[in-house]
Amino acid sequence: MGPVSARYRELASYSDEGTVEVRYQWPGNPLVTERHSFRTLFRAPRHFFFRFDADPAAGGDAMVIWCDGGPFQSWWKATGVHTVHDGGKGAVTFLTAQSPTKDSANLVAPHFFPQAKLPGPTYGLIEPREDGADELAGRRCRRIAADQRITGVVTVETRPTRVWIDQDSGLVRKVLVDTAPDSPAGMIDQRIFLIEPVADPKLSDDQFTFMPPGSAP
Image 1 (cartoon, helix red, strand yellow):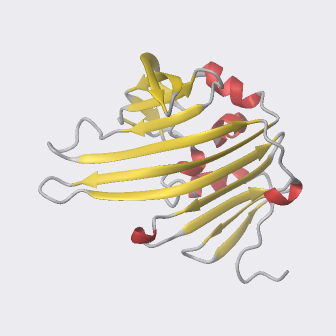
Image 2 (tube, one colour):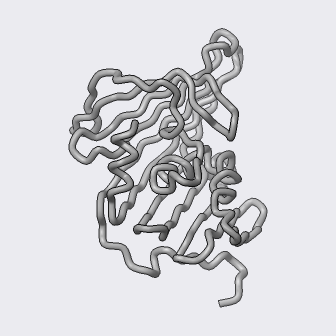
Image 3 (cartoon, rainbow, N blue to C red):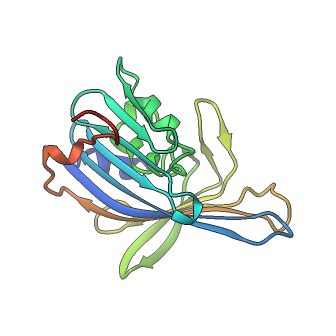
């Protein structure tokens, strides 16, 4: 994954739109499927914007993370809380977003901010290996697979993970975080991320700001 991280770090700017499909089934129960959406913007060295919108059928929650050059900030619809993560605590923004955003906030951010050592679905993979090639929406991709990944400071999770890397752009287009092998027989616990990345788009300053509902103008 080293060349993948290097590709993100060399970008002057980046944008994406994506979905994360969460599939969960406890043995003997119906399959529950949720489909959430997200959007990411980045402009070097640290302008950042991320918005997650949950499936309306799953409650319609939302979370926003942004940095317009100052401290990282976040707003969570479920709590109505707006937090300014100053004092060099920007990493906390992403760590607290892991669960509310189904880990989509940490999908590409760790590659842009490697010094923060953020865990994510495409970062901290243990012993990643080449896993063949595939085609997604007419684009050739190579697959990278790993059986374990780091999800915290010292936490290791045994979740088979596959990452699809666009052959031309070198950017992530799909991620599958699969069911842990020690789960009960017949259990399904998956997260499937689909991403449409854009390398070096033109982004204006106002795209990195957000006014939380109820805030004074």
